[in-house]
Image (cartoon, rainbow, N blue to C red; front, top):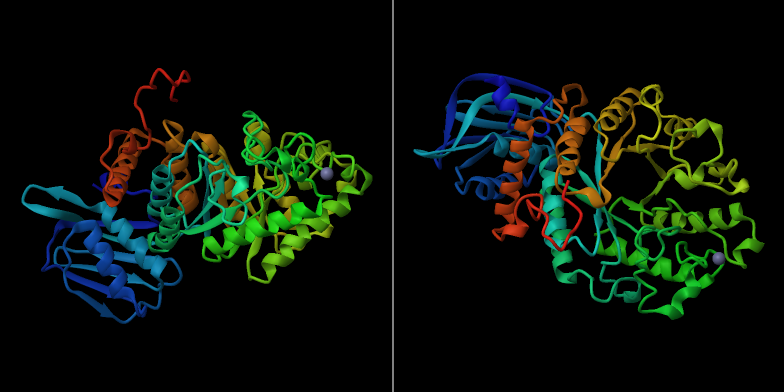
Length: 482
Ligand SMILES: [Zn+2]
């Protein structure tokens, strides 16, 4: 019985005990919340109505002194449902668990097993990086944010690839692929209620025209060839010598931060800036000075807003340094040695490692994170789709007491890989000690949760439902869906 109940939960709780019997939920159910939160009844009432369409009377009692932060306790007996929480996030976590436990039956809308669950996350920053490509509809983006929140990620970094409807510089996005601003605003407003903080990302170094190296789709330059001077000759990196570049970037990062409701982090990207500082003007300058001045400008800008910068690590470490052999390092400039000393220590270093080192080397530790930590920086480790890496990084995060991790998904957030990101990753981030890995029952639960999210959004169209638009690739897409 215990295993059947665990199979319904993503992620797995820290402690679960199963009692005999079931709770038949109705308007007469006794529902108690033990908390000092002033708006606890409001939060609970709204979610119970949304999840189960029935709202019993909610009683509020004194808080449980053993429960803090995002932790929660959920006790379901035949006669009562009781939640103890100290924060809105903790309360929402318990209610998400409650929803995942629910079963529908012929004689009663909703039935819960009798259980006691004591829960707390293994790490406080549980992030997922989501790409808003022109191919990703706003519906799909919203679905993924909602499901990530349901699986107890508490941060989502959103990177727009020429799709953000800028008011300050609309020329930076595709004219025909910008999201509807009002709809995007609604997502920004509602995300907090889903229990997730959205973090904007804008690349201030490479990936400059919102394009990927394999596409040649420079979002800015097809419609605005006169703006080529903002970029180094290949169009891949911002030109750091051009004072107009800094003004444009300042405008757009501040617009994004405002639009996202002033979150505590802003991601400035900075990965894979292959030919940064390659124009004739930049070549005349010292790269270290140019780069440091650039980063420090944005750091000061966001410090005034009490907002921490996040950045990918790879341009900060040299590719030819033997310490990083087998690990991701992209820096090529000789002046990069000791560059980290030029950076403020409160920049959160996002150490992305995509499993190019042999497994025995990865199992021995994560040297890039270790390096930055030893120099006084905080890091979050960022796996891609490798489940062993997710597990190893989660164990490392717990072992060294890091704040958390950021899962990256890129252009693979569909089909079979979806299960790595939305099943295996939440298992690893919430409770690495009890990660059952991917199984058919886990996949079935993932599908059920997607169904619940689609219900919340009122989605019924075939292509909108589930986590893959098509079960068989239509002929116009020659690549098979994995
Ligand atoms: Zn330049």
